[in-house]
Length: 323
Image (cartoon, rainbow, N blue to C red; front, side):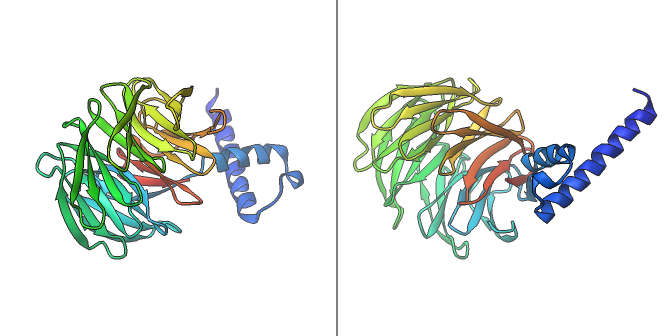
């Protein structure tokens, strides 16, 4: 293409985007504007994300009802952001190499994966004050709250630790598969993704009794509950597995991007971060249909839903994206 034609095309694209932006801001309906502008508007809105800078190598995310919390693995701290506009409300020191977070209704719990820590930190959500730091197993990764207690997946110990949320007392340590990473609670049971066993373990939350181990894809990492089913991101298979929570039966396997990591449920859909695709995929829970794939920052990992928007921690961009 001659340079002059290429320049014209570029100008037209810029003008179309500017026009699309104006339409979006003005709330103009599609029926009253040029179809080409509307097509650009739909593309623009589908790919529009807002990014906010945080600490170094953000991994996990969590929502506390009003704010988003982000674990910055290489800064040894967590960032608190107002969900409505992304404004930073504070940065709070935790242990070494924080990974993932859980909210217990009043406090934020953070796993500190480094061998120099092997702990979880409990911070008061209102002001970030450290309430306590509690030892768990080796290389704590995933974490979940069951309504009363905190569950932590210890990757290098091949077990999970159950802590009483009120005071951090250890209530039990339970063996699962090899290299457990992700954790989710389904209302009665705790599900754990065993990355090196290509399986998920189901434990009764009341006493930690193993209720079953179920095969999924290769290198399962993330786990989420949709109200009826368990969704597992399989890092090396580039897909999601859907299991019926009641009995662990596989209901489907669905392709997503490259190296899926964190997963979150938005009330109707599952969102998964594709680490090497620099994107997130939205999947309808009813049937696994892909509803869209959206560009975010570099190496997205953790995902959280705030009731309106989806937040994605971009490990390689030192940012979080809001969609």
